[in-house]
Image: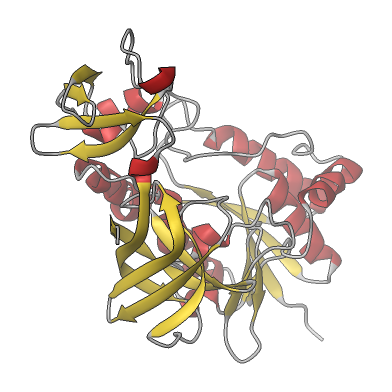
Length: 356
């Protein structure tokens, strides 16, 4: 029987290195494909990552290619990132990158290379039994289904997630056993185009912002902000409020970004002002068969959060989510991601929250 050809998205990291290794061990004809999603500006680590991809693929004795998706990334992901910040929302470009790049142009190019299957080093699992179902990873602490909530069902056709049933420690142990150059490489965090640089300085070069007053809930000025887009709900660090004590000396945190008057509103204490009882969302994406228009499930409103019980009502592109218990700092622009047990049902963009 002819071997199936699988094209693996190679990032130059530990996880994709092991994904390629495991698939070769399973008898696939493995091809590595490296994506360059950002123009080289001396900060993004693409050049070093490409060197690591070449070394890993050489060790595994598999062919490898590099493809430049920087234009598609700017048009489909970075423009969204900037637009959201212009609207004083907090975006998650990694979610869009999966739908618009990794399971879009990447998959298309992989098929031009003759791919029967496509694989990545994501920590999640998948079932193709009668439907394409996205499942949580065995390693709960590394599960990345949150970042895949906007991938369309059809995009998951012929996709393999080799790390779905593994623990991170097992994965890194394989790289050490194999003597791969990625064995001691740190896990990447955040967004490639920001890299190790200062986030605020990066944003300033694209979005000049208007400074304004920081006020407490009574309207008293307690400081000055550098632009509303640079802050997010619940933020405590980097507010620059000095010499003004809060209640019982507690630290200040952001509770509202008020466009009228260009005010950043802060409070201190236990964070009651950040609690909400539900949310309205848009841009629903269901993975697999859509659920009933009213149902109960669990949901996450940020990565690494424990999934919380909710009730959901949806119609067309709009969704209303009622929380079983109040949630803290649910942030417009982020994603509400829904689960039925270990199955990720999909997600929607958070538009606004409400209280009873």
